[in-house]
Length: 271
Image (cartoon, rainbow, N blue to C red; front, side, top):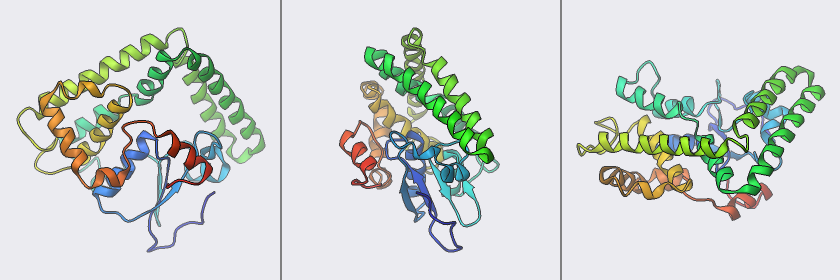
């Protein structure tokens, strides 16, 4: 699946999954930064391509997105977004950094998958089994790839922790907690935007707008979209963010596109 290392002057290569929350952040930032790049689809659902040794050597976290540059590899969406917009933690103003830290401190996966498990009794049976299977597969890969054994074992521990977090007996309460926190974030956004500002940290669109735009998209995806119109300033902001050319270019998912998800896995849909 992996291509050779980039030559100087080549376009950056973004390994991503269309439905992935953090891939959306990377795509949106790259679109806003007008960074020409090549997109490479990673099947994280069926083939589990992110666990293949060649990908693991690019991104030991076995996650998406990954941005391969001629001189380095960025394997965190925050780092990719900072690169795309030409900023860094050291140059960010206090307010912008606070919004970023707030966003990245929130376990969005627990909202998304916690909600699915809370609403679906079958999922509460199947997902823990899938997590256990994934852990066992990672340990098997560790045995087959001694040079990457520590990396695979560390990732297996992550899946063991996920199985604990998504315990069927506790997941409904977890979902309620994460939904309440998400609503609180929308209240904070409403309060900040209530002075009429067009972007979160004036005077210009920035990194905070990237991550919170994707967050609002996930609110729609996670059946919390009805909360947005209840907050006039937030609703105005959300409409403005969706109207930016970068929004469709970044392919922000506000709902599940099952056909595209399957098509990507089969190699017949856009990456």
